[in-house]
Length: 324
Image 1 (cartoon, helix red, strand yellow):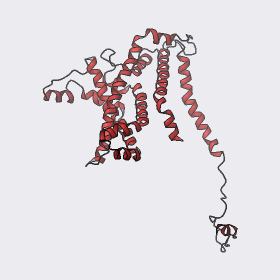
Image 2 (image 1 turned 30 degrees about the horizontal axis):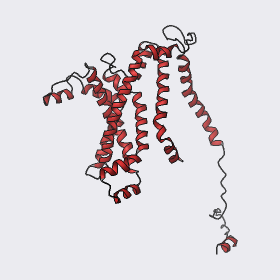
Image 3 (image 1 turned 120 degrees about the vertical axis):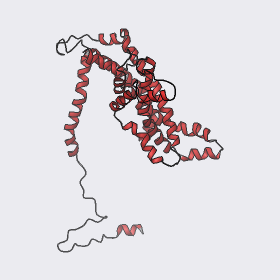
Image 4 (image 1 turned 45 degrees about the vertical axis):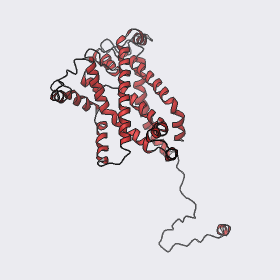
């Protein structure tokens, strides 16, 4: 049957007078394959993007090997000092090292709390309940707010006569001077950051839970696994790549934390809440040590790349295999 159909002549009807001929499905595709014209038109934009991205990076890298300050001379006339800025930062600048450790501590506390809260919300939203759609949008709202707005809002909330202290007074705990104690000021930064970015963990983990394969879960249920054992022994291990990606995204963001800390505490009291980004900002724009600040920025950039590399190492092959 198929051979007859293949050998039968094609029945092509002549178009009527004044009518355009139509291409039938049996006719060969007359479209020309796309050439390189489209790529040619994107080259200028790509070149401009590379120049905009790479040129400041190279200038800052060169700057980090000099002693340039805008209050003394031009960058062209600055003396080349080699690795002196890097040596000063890593060996003698205790404030820089403390800012790094403080940022890592902030990341550890915030990421732990955000993960626990985000996972709890994600598990809760696997069920159907009244008002689920509204609450889903409500819980994602903090993530949409600009960091500057979040920082200013929580700065007002934590004031001596602010709403938080008024609530504490009503329940008999008394007002707290949040920004005069290093521990309380650090706690205020943690509360602000957790409120702002827990929705990101919630969204990523909920997406991962909704895409878990059903066959292993059904097999575990048939074998008599309890709900708790089913989650921790079957579902949770399959979320490992999703959890890793969520931690990497948030770790990169929290290393760059600036707006909330700047608006809440300015790094105080003293330098007890000073993040690494805020310290580099003070070096560059308060003290005008731009070369020294550039060296600090490149140290943080290199350390961040190494950290991301090791965080993604356990799941890199799994993520790349899924992308093929």
